[in-house]
Amino acid sequence: MSVVDKNTSHLAGEFLVAGELSRRGYPVSITMGRAKSVDIYAGTQGGIIVDAKALRSKSDWPITKDGINKDQFYIFVFLRTQKESKENKYTEYFVAKGEELLPMIETWGTMQVIKYSSLNNKDFKDRWDKLPPP
Image (cartoon, rainbow, N blue to C red; front, side, top):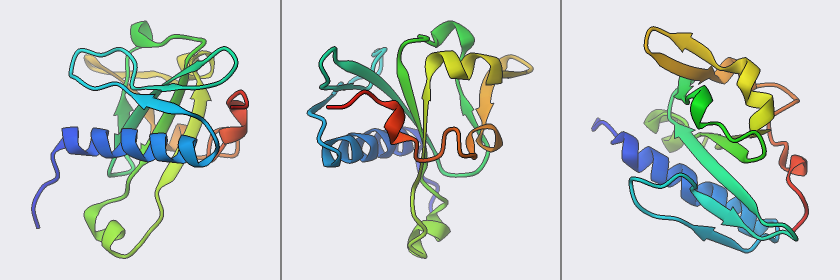
């Protein structure tokens, strides 16, 4: 079985989030490139900025406290492993505002992360209602 490139996983997460936002009535625009600070702009009265983060295993999403914008929305995507995807296991989404994430960021050596287990609860899982209406 081939290893999936982490950049491919990140792009898959961005496109899935953009698709889900679009399905929910938001006009969306995906930004492209490696040096971007925003992944998706979604249309609301004030406009919202979404950062999508994706991974394929129940591990940790890399993130830094300094990189968090407390007013921005972050949507974490658990794509599933390749085996689980082939078994048609559904993608999981976790929605949070930056200010909610700050106390959950853990430091492991030189890395800062958000754990899957920290987001896998009723406060974050499938909480699309946190976003302002389109």
